[in-house]
Image (cartoon, rainbow, N blue to C red):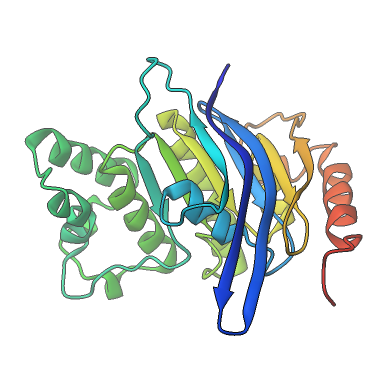
Length: 259
């Protein structure tokens, strides 16, 4: 399967009155349609910067992003960007939070609203549609934020540590559940995470970035022997520990990482 998106030699620096800080250096990798890619690396290495470049929020100083749509068109994939925090507005109901993106894009069509209704039912939030965000648990808020993102029918989902605000037990169940639901849609996903176990259990492939300025230090395909095809079961796969050790080795033996 061909790459839906391909990064070639992406570089980026931050500039201030105190000088230049190089964040990314010659980053190159592709993402195939329907693939789940996890990006890991030391804290502060530029993972979120890279995601912002892919989303079109930042322009790289060097390099290009190539698009290969399955239909042969050259338009940039529709992006859904889910951040670390849910950013739900308390003065709007859960349902009106979910339709906010549609409202801003003038796409409150019967078809899109029907999609929101289906997602509410599928994600187990239908009976909370008229509640306020403060009445939801942390995991339910993340589901609501994801529905808001999926309502615009993105082709590519970008997730920037979307489960980091949850406690560990909730994070295990919510990340497993949400990624299972995303896989059912056939969407392509890039997720940033600091949790190596999470990266292994969720992704088809892991991109390892070095310390700043970040380069692609390694790419690890994830192939696990599973009796139950779920992220939670992945942690018990016989290959899991070996992959974890390889990632840990890459993360802790990095000459670019400042200690």
